[in-house]
Length: 254
Image (cartoon, rainbow, N blue to C red):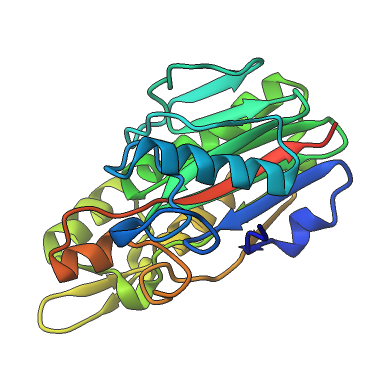
């Protein structure tokens, strides 16, 4: 079964690295989770989730596909072997071939990292809380402990909610303005007292401060592109009971 996915040109050029941004197409789930739901924390049938994850792993050639129990933190887990119980964390790094690091999202920002020369990769789940808390910087630091060099690291911002789809209130903007000086440019006036927040722009802003070699953005709005991606914001608008998760995966080839 062919599984569609998107790639980032910057990462695709790197030798020894495989990656893919997987949306909702090509799997076996039904109903609200149709069809490639890879979220172990969703209410989907466990056998369907397992099959979907196997399809993703096979598509990229991963022997194992690992995801964390994501909690919007800045915690990073170094991975040297597969696990059975998911750790509570929002990022992973490894220098072991064949292990697919899989970030689960449904509007939050997935960021994949690679230093191909060092053979070190990372993956982070960066919602606004995690990004504000430093998960992206922590991922880069964890990669350097495995031998990566900041100037060689390429980061790819994957499918995430776009600014046109992300309406927030004035209290959200006030929190940001207090916690993140210089963030005025991330907010565009919306209807009434609302603002449109640029989440991928915020991820890029944070990444630009850590001295890595390159940052690229696939530019896909998960909330707006219904046929291709799951979206929690869209689910909330419709009052649906649950939602599937998109998978963003990176691995070192054997």
